[in-house]
Length: 551
Image (cartoon, rainbow, N blue to C red; front, side, top):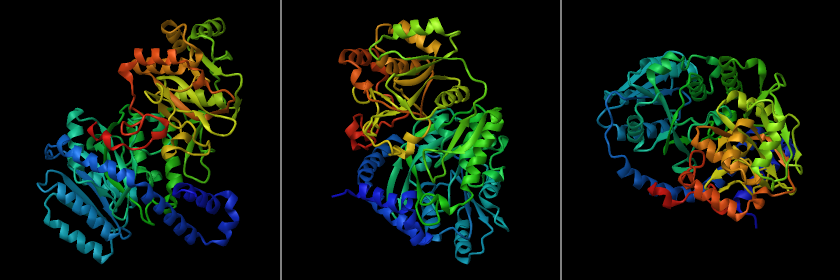
């Protein structure tokens, strides 16, 4: 018998994918959307049992972890209300804010964005009794970007926190945000973890990685809850570009990244994104301008980074019929590279000797390609060149590798996972997009396999000096540890993709793995890109554990 997850995936596949196009012609679009929402909600509610058990422990832990008070003048929440705002959800949001801000230390700026709805207007009038709530009005609907800009200009707190009118804040949200701001020396910009709400039920928790500019340029993962220095937001043109109407958070965080201000991650679920038919949490199609606004964010990044002539902003070829993007590197300005095809049993010193005789400089790229690989895309080197170009701190770019049966062998690896440095996605079908589609997105990771990877010659030489007699099969973990100690980045890209008949993980001997774990015990496990609440074995990968509440 099919389990609910498998059944939901199969139904979705047949109803909404290209292979089920004949069904789409028979079923009206509104019926399709309703079926999809119902099917997804049933699966999420079934799957949320683990989240509820974990969350109960987290909320108890947070009562003692965050015991401070709010700092007056520190926070300004920003919310736009318009005629399409569901009043019942806005009431719940207001109650969640009022409950945790009884003393009025935080400010809440609410924009009446051209409302004509008498019920909404009546409820807004009742909020005037709270002196810390600032109500402002636009006679016409200024849209998302225009409305947030009006809120920003009316705010007075040191930090702004944009909150959608139909979403919800956990009771300790403002307290946790305040604590993280203070403990991190008042940084320019921060973001939190989140989950979603179906009715009163919390589902689909998104425990996010620490700040990752690579993933940022693939998705707006930082959204909900953003915490931004107000003066810096004004200085960097926040909410000023109407072309980014559907992506204000993504545009803002990208502006800060381009300006050299990375975000601080608050690893706590404090924001719930509500799922209902009119929300993008439930259906990105509810805002048809999402596609153009997201493309505008990425194009602005390229323009401001001086890279526009070398890249095209294209839909991801891996995530069909979705609003996902790829910065495709044009085939210009080829960087010097050397290809190495040595067996995995060869040593790292053997590899370094071969490369030193062929490379012209230490900045040349070394392309490691196992001789059994069948590579999917001929432009894989251009993909790697683009990543090294956009992220100069990169020490290695690695691939998605699957076996001949279509199961994942390797992708993004985690230091401390499995035997010592393994892939949490190992064994999944190659068509599975993975945890929050991360298998289909470029992103920073702990490590990648040396079976199919690209790295600067200088990084290879550095590892060869430290571990000359280790096998090439262990190069990925050793280089990952070196990169972590030296402030370098490892990137996984699904656009480097191949089929292999050899499992390189099985070629790593127990003695090699043991040596690696002993010498790098202080780095294990690495939770920068794999949250500590998740299990560290394949059978528990991405599964929440209540025992993690004591973290």
